[in-house]
Amino acid sequence: MEPAASATMLLLLALLLSVAAPTALGGERTPTLVFILAGQSNMGGRGGATVGGRWDRYVPPECAPSPRTLRLSPALQWEEAREPLHAGVDVGNVIGVGPGMPFAHAVLRSSSVPRGSVVGLVPCAQGGTPIASWSRGTELYNRMVTRARAAVAGTGGHGKLAAILWFQGETDTIRREDALAYAGRMEAMVRDVRQDLGMPNLLVIQVGIATGQGRFVDLVRKAQTAVRVPNLRYVDAKGLPIANDNTHLTTQAEVRLGTMLAHAYIATLH
Image 1 (cartoon, rainbow, N blue to C red):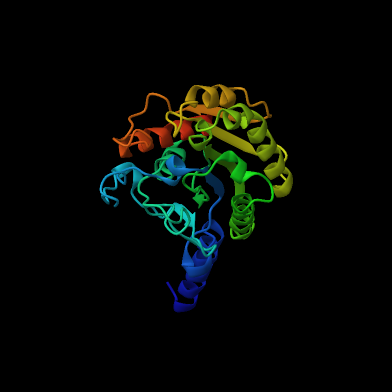
Image 2 (image 1 turned 60 degrees about the vertical axis):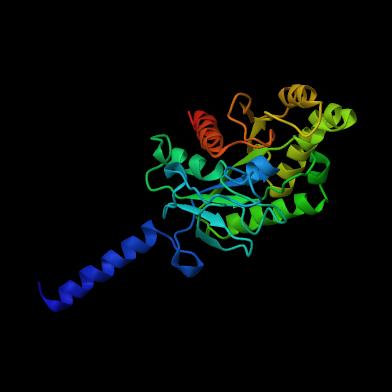
């Protein structure tokens, strides 16, 4: 091949690759599917982090990093996702494995997701927080909305916000009045965040709690199943393995939950 022809072919190849794989700051690919991870500690991830005040640093294969799974950093930049996903976000807590990475891998394995998809995970969870701390105007609510907007803007127009994954409620088991108010507060939060993001039908996948910090676990679980808003799916964590602190999911349980959340999301695509 002549040098000029060779150079032309290389230029065309480079242009094709740039269209097929959009880049972000730092050269990373940008997500095509963006998911918000919100709630409290079991979403933030405590797998392997419930003994001795430190994370055991075990990363199961289902949570291994991949160029097709990114996370939005605390500085609002896309980067390759690695455990613990909530590092620098779920502040003041010892964090470990959560459901986000196994969720992303399971989504990407699905034939229902367009080939070449890139998942962007947006950690927003904060341990020990009641749902009242996530109402419109609170610090956590504002942080979630800000990070969601930055995440979509950071895709350069190539990505969409696909869903909010919500796992929260253990703190609301402490007081009976909070347990009884849970359904109404959850419905208000979903309506508000959809309005503020301009996505009136944004999918929300809610996890039913398996444990609690108080004695009203059953009341909160009942309230969670009573939430009535359009396009909300429910995944039940009850029955998954619990760590020896009787509150947090084990690493293996977080992996299973991530897969369950992925199946719930994929079911909405059909």
